[in-house]
Image (cartoon, rainbow, N blue to C red):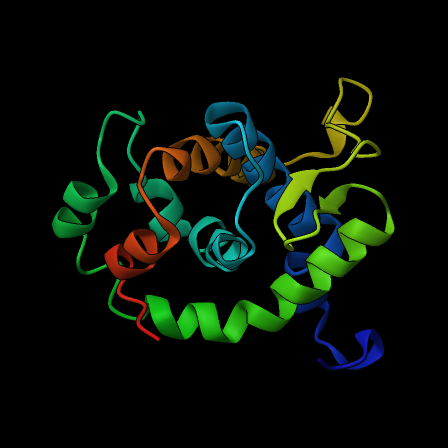
Length: 166
């Protein structure tokens, strides 16, 4: 990872660890609500490449009724470079998890799985004027992603559906 002072301003804004940590926390919170257990650590690496990539985020289904496998078959063009996006954003994901855990916005259990922490500040009416439409969309879709991944099968199945192999 580059020091913050060396990063382009746009990159610093988009990959802000507080914002990215919020997206991970939002996904893990909804995953936990639906499945009753924490988000597997490996799935955290899919969140940012899905949510921060506008074409992918906008192509996500409207409901969790749509299966991941069916969706992935219908959206092959979006998934062409997905493994590369995961690789490129893995450092940002790690940095965001560490930042979130340090701020008690994320909590890692003894197996490294992720839960929303007790210090996460949700966007409230007071902070809402600071949110752009795209920021709100990212937060809303990250929550959806948590519910969708919870019903998508095992971590290995989810990785395979996104075209990621060991």
